[in-house]
Image (cartoon, rainbow, N blue to C red):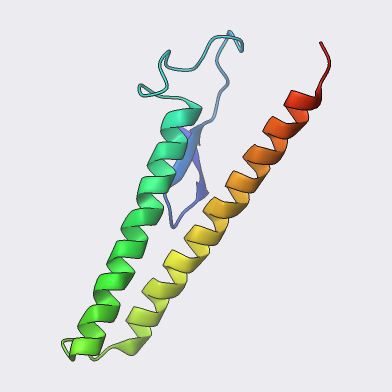
Length: 103
């Protein structure tokens, strides 16, 4: 069972923590865990952007008449991108804080 953090992106995180917090979840970054979640979220943001670009192109060519749905798709892609950038900024900030720690 997982909790959805941002429904438009369908990004979800497990509701329970692993029993051994020092071991990476899923082992490899490609198998699961934090890296896979980030990769999935970036892919979903890209999909939203591509879909909105396609709808704008159809509107410009005259193949679509519903400007409202096109604007909703564009705004959804924009908000998803802004969220992704804020998450990136937080990750970079956390990395910088950890790198400043003295061991």
